[in-house]
Image (cartoon, rainbow, N blue to C red):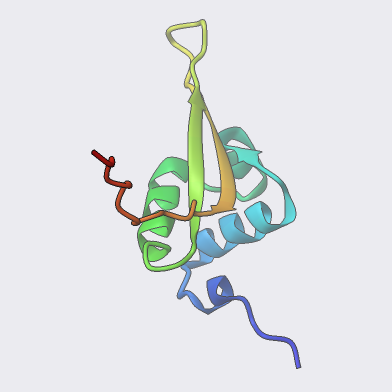
Length: 97
């Protein structure tokens, strides 16, 4: 029996579920793709909401924004679903005297 992904157990809204499915199928996607293919009006706001739901998991949606050279153009955001980096809480070694 296969174990279900913890991300599938999160209570996504219908729009968040569309984004999750798209990010699961692709390495990354842009805000333009989410607006066009998922019919999402505010991708950045939904991604922020999704990251709050993912706070207690090993996953996050990484966001990077490419600025446009045209001031009136909307910057394009790139989104990627990825595992959070492992944090090491080991104290640094004390120097010997």
